[in-house]
Length: 116
Image (cartoon, rainbow, N blue to C red; front, side, top):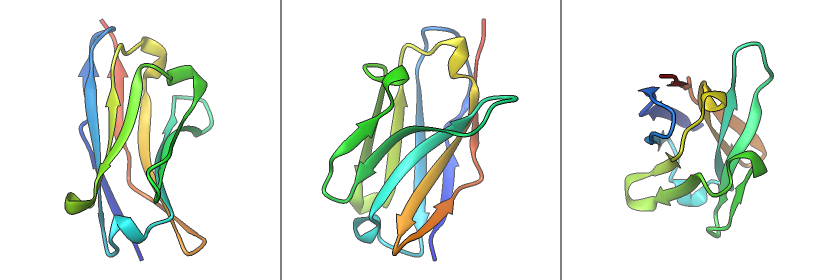
C-alpha cells in the first residue's frame, strides 16, 4: 500500500514557475517501480506528463519537454515536478502516480492555474 500526497499547486501568471511535490508513505520510493505525474484539464481526459523510474531514467511528454523537469529525493521519499515557462494550457489538476508490484496508486491531486 502506498499513500501519495501532492502539494505545491496554485495560481501563477503565464511564464511563471511552480514546484510540485509528491510525498510517498507506506513504501520507500526506492522500491517503487516508477513514480510519475499526470494532469487533467477541465473537460479533458487525464494525460501523462512525466515519469521517473527506479533506475533514475525519466520520460517527459513532448508538450512539456524543456519546460518541466521530474526529479526525486530518496531520503525524503519525495518526487518533484518543476514547472517552468508555464502556459495557460498547462492549467489542470496534477496527480502523482506510483506503480508498485503491478498496482497503481494515485494522490488526490493539486490544482495548477495559469492565468493573468
